[in-house]
Each structure stands twice: as C-alpha cells, then as structure tokens.
Image (cartoon, rainbow, N blue to C red; front, side, top):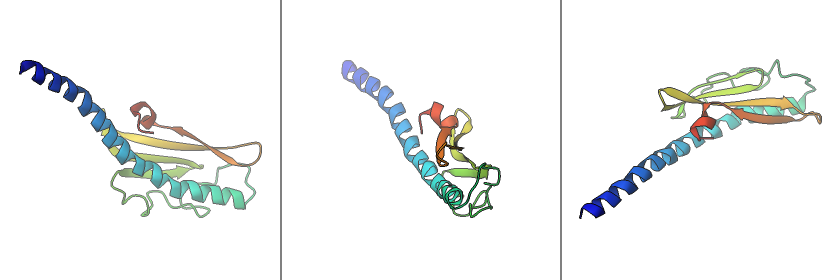
Length: 129
C-alpha cells in the first residue's frame, strides 16, 4: 500500500508541473494569435508604400490599430499592447515568478525590402513561445 502511494505521489509530482506548463502554453497561444492584427497591418502598410525605415509604424498610424486597441485588449490573457517603430509589445496577464509574461516582435527590413520578425520577451525563458 505504501509503495503504491509513493508511486502515485511521484507521478503526481511530475505531472502537475507539466500540466501547469501545458495550461499556460494554451493561454499564451491567444497572446501570440492576437499579435497577428498588428503584424498583418504593419506588413500591409510596409508592402504598399516605399518605406526605408519603420519610424512611422506606431499604433494608430498607417492603418495600424491603436495601442491597447479594443480589438486586442478584450482578450482574457492580454494586459497591454503597444506598437512603437514597428515593434509589437504585448504584455500578457499570465504571471510567472511575480511578473507578467511579455511577447515582443521586432521587424527588420531585409535586402529584398521585405520584413522578417524576431521574437523576444520573457515568454522565451518561460517556455511559452
């Protein structure tokens, strides 16, 4: 009986943290999906005009939704969203280690005059993105 309880306790100690990580990844997928509104509008504005820098690509300009847009903020797991110089910064309401997890997409202009995106933020260290 004690051996059975020990085995169940061991399995639970492994399974519960993995389950919590799975739940946070599922919640964070909504954060990643919400950035597509900003990302698509930046790519469209960049492709339809001849820009050599991303200085004007701020929330509320060039058809990019405003910062903390009503299209994004109602999402359950998003606390703050901004676009400054094309950089998309999303702060989620998912808290790990006492601070909210962030997701940052930074565009760079390639030699072919297209945009490529680099992902940074605390979501990488948390294993959520």
